[in-house]
Image (cartoon, rainbow, N blue to C red; front, side):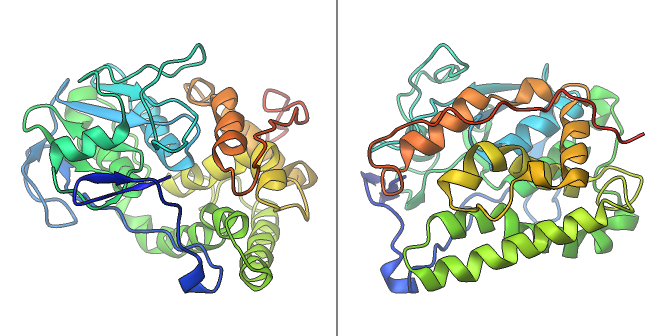
Length: 324
């Protein structure tokens, strides 16, 4: 993954020399907000009104952050209201590309651009920063609304309710204070912890990431012995934020990112939980394991320089989850 500097593409990887071998994720650049009437959202930014057909979502099936947005587009009934483009799974010297394939890469169905970076420079010609997905684009103003997945899913959660009639709430106000620390721990040690483990370039940086990762998996296994979902008997955004990492863990993170103390398959409660969420309506269609496995093993030549794609164990997501 390269980056833009003053609108010019540079094929450079993350610099871990200055951080003692530790992978540091950069913050999202675009943090605007869609609301039902276009008023200011929680970030204080406004001017983006929820309208059917107005917004376009750029995603990668491989990326867990983009996967969150795809899930909320599905479970909130937004598939007919927000169009999508899917990048190619190979992220090489040109970054995310709009090359098509036979496994779900669509090309840029909105502008016909060649690279994801072209979407960023269309919005901001002198853009400096990483080119990441998801990207939520406003067709009316020719702008990027957001490239922060945690905020995109919250927009999808409520902003379009009057259009879709879907009032399911995955971030209920009365639960937000309880959800926040759960999200924070899972993000730091697991969602991002797999990357901190896999992209570490010193033993100390790897150790500092991988041990807390498995402490969190052990904590989750125990939590699911008493709770159906993370916050009890109601599924929330915290579950979907966790789940996109779990579903990638055994086929990718266990081997490729050296997170190999245990597999999710070795945790009975986590396995049942992962299967149950996969089997919920609309979720299986958001999972493209061909893109997931190919992207990680083919794109990270610092980890897998010969780009050999492993055969992996057979997945068991469709088996009985045994959770009532």
